[in-house]
Length: 95
Image 1 (cartoon, helix red, strand yellow):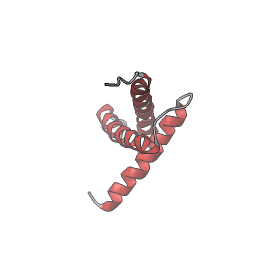
Image 2 (cartoon, helix red, strand yellow):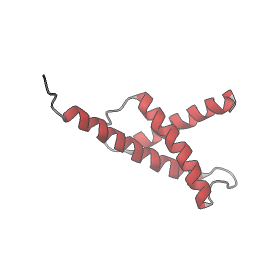
Image 3 (cartoon, one colour):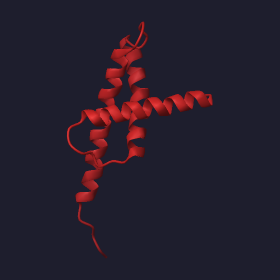
Image 4 (cartoon, one colour):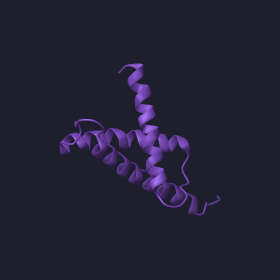
């Protein structure tokens, strides 16, 4: 992988993560770094899923692929937010 591929993966991951986060109602309690990680994972999985479904390579803008990636980012952000919120709500035990 070239540096340009890494930079484009970061940019696309950030965009997908941000769009996924914006599509969710309410406030999410995860940081920007986690949003970027979730976005990158959603972008990679969304591209793979779009290829499997046969909508990954179309003429012009791949709207179906973007939609799949954003939905996956929404699910990832919501799942991570719920997981992190669950750890904050648990009382700490002092020994």
